[in-house]
Image (cartoon, rainbow, N blue to C red; front, side, top):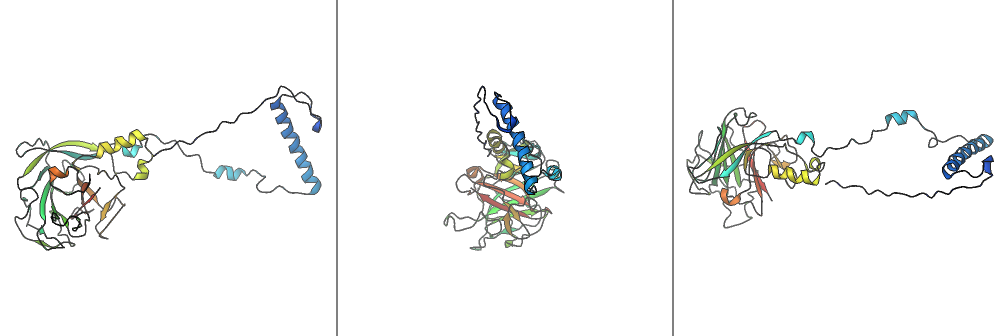
Length: 313
């Protein structure tokens, strides 16, 4: 966050008059006049001494016009709201509602629980730890009309291993540990998790829950250093703008950027390695384990063929 540097103000005494005979100065000079005259006199004396003894001026004594021209300019004043954080990223705010009471007004569609509606051949992921089918959590049918960066309509299916009997034993927060999966159709089969062609299987919520979707605009993704340019009020406002259940938009990375790297099978801060596709914070409504006040975020690969999911708190 921003901090203000303290400033110390010095005080200077002024005497009404002073008397001096040094260097031929006139008496009873005002203090400012005395200082100016003394400075000039000492300068002349210094030059005379250097000439007498043959001393040359050092580089530190000289003023170099070239150096003055090449010196970096003072930092420009930072506005309270950098231009690159202006809301511009399309998002759909999720409002949880009983099945049949969806208020969506867009071509995308989202629902939690029930069984997946497969767009292509079914691909049900299996837990790497116990080999059992993961639980189906939600599906996100997204359309280029709502998200112009999409190259075609897609359905993204979220699965997570059930760690009810071994909390923390399943690394469900890690996108590449094989304890969660984001299946993309049309798309590619993830190579870090095994799948079976099951039409139906375990579900986190037996009763399907449809949701309402409301178009919004989020500010772009920002790192902690970029957010550090904001004032305290604007910093809080930025987090409030992005911290809601959504499709698309900007995740609330309140602990720093976390983007899956599909090539390196790791998580880093390079925002070019993945595209955020949803964020969930209402753990109970979504029937998700997110730890203490966590956020679950889904991503598409840059070629939009694969998906990855992670959560943090």
